[in-house]
Image (cartoon, rainbow, N blue to C red; front, side):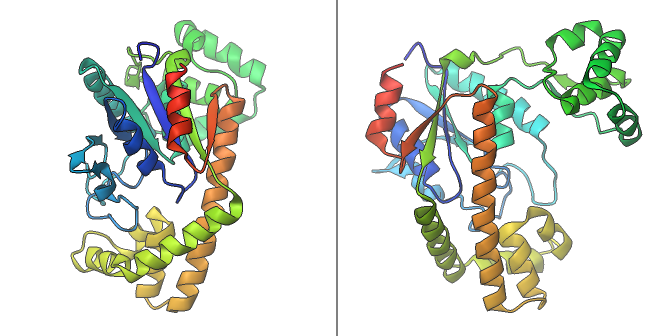
Length: 305
């Protein structure tokens, strides 16, 4: 296992990522780091699919991180995720365990695997509009003029990234970036992707939605509203389950409309996730696709590293 510094388990929604990650952890000393942009929020359990019981197998709890860490009223960013990931990653590694990054938020996963240089500096819309008029070559020249050192280490594969680099380099607070000292060696990471037929994913999504609606998801959202933890406007921000149940509770749509629209929206979300994962492959991330998340196949890939 000295050749492995990180195992990543990814896949579209409802494919059993947590189950596979926990089962891997039963065979390899590991702790799980969640890469889910909504499971970080307290009190949003059923709608985000935390399924915390899955982390316990035969009475043995697999430690997990970045779940239930902030209140729903707070914002969270890729920058913050990346910073907190590295802290947790280092702590797990010091225990001679292998961290397992598990989730479906592609941007979170990509920010780690491709060692994004990120910053919490807010976008400068006026600057962006001016820079958009320039070609990629012109942007590169400008970036080098502003900060030669930063331009050498910044990932400059697209205009958008170059513009973001210039934006950060031009800021008075340009030092506020995640210059990760513990950059991951991509050659020592294993990325496992759960591959399922489209019809099976659709069936699992619908069955899971029905189960959650019948087992407290609407009540969960109603409680968040009743306790003034969330507003209807904030529910829209979280999208999917929270958005459409919010519409239903606000009497904008009927129950049947809510179910139909939400079911369709989750199917579309799963397709978008797969599109993002394919883009990750084009950017140099090797994803080992495992049919239906088969544990034996996953362990064979890990053991062959």
